[in-house]
Length: 464
Ligand SMILES: [Zn+2]
Image: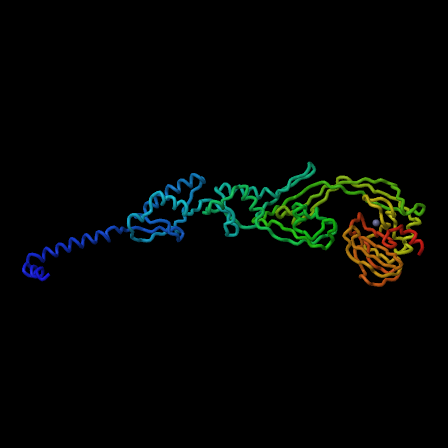
């Protein structure tokens, strides 16, 4: 070593430049080995997800251009990529880390989202429905205006449309949206009609049944039944609440029109009382004849439902002729029997006797025809055993326990005036008659049971 140092010292002027040159060559070699293989590039992000590493992002734009063509020919629509979701970040990396062209194409296809150019029906400033073409949206509006137009049912009817109005403000505008949101004309029309489902509570009125309600609301009776599992369609009552799910259209169409139609005028009836005949007898003295008239009605429809209806004029085409009936006034034995016991005198007529076969069932009592709201009296003193709704056809029912195993039933009432456990006296008003349950008209069904077995009530009434 000492010899070597000596050598350097002795030959300084020759060796030093040589040494510097060697170091420089070595430095360049090392630099190449560790640094030069890193090249500039860009990380590509779609929707904040890194999908590729590229040298030059121009290549992405050319891939997107061909992808755009491919999608456009597939949908037959112009599209726009959601380019704001595409981001680049400058970076450097070695050559083998860069994404190949094939996998770059593949991952763009999988990750890039796009919107289609289309047309929108804008309702109250909000894009509501998207269709491909402007024509499609225009046709949608035209179809909607025609959808609720009333049509004449026969030759004697005439409908003159005065105005068809869409109540909401709307415009047709160019728009962009994702492909699945662009509806066919058919689906767009259904969507417009159904809009959102709205829940409505309907209170049952006199004369309603589940089928008439379904018809009025343009619903399938089964749908209505399903929506009201707690309601038995055979026993709906005035005042019951029924849940109705109704479509609330996105656009409301109001149609004003004049409806001219012919209507029958029923023959007016005159009843002459005749004391030579029984109360149960009626004789037609003059048959009479119905007339008819032409009615002019001004109607406003809202989505097909009548909003207002006014008759502006009536023209008599044929005057009706009077119908004259002769009605007996003499009481029948049964009539007197009933009226003298639990009904005020002169009201009741037995319309159905005990033991007759009706609706495939033996009639378990007697029916006394009376107007709704007539006082129903306790046949004799007793204790109220039942007062309320009976689901098997009796409707609003009162049962009185008279002791000794004797019970009386008073059915189809409109109003019940007593409560279970009440003591009642003979002749006390226990209910108001009606037409509830299985009943074809206002009447009192009176039934007597002895030890639970129904028997003919007439002998009991006679016994009073
Ligand atoms: Zn009956």
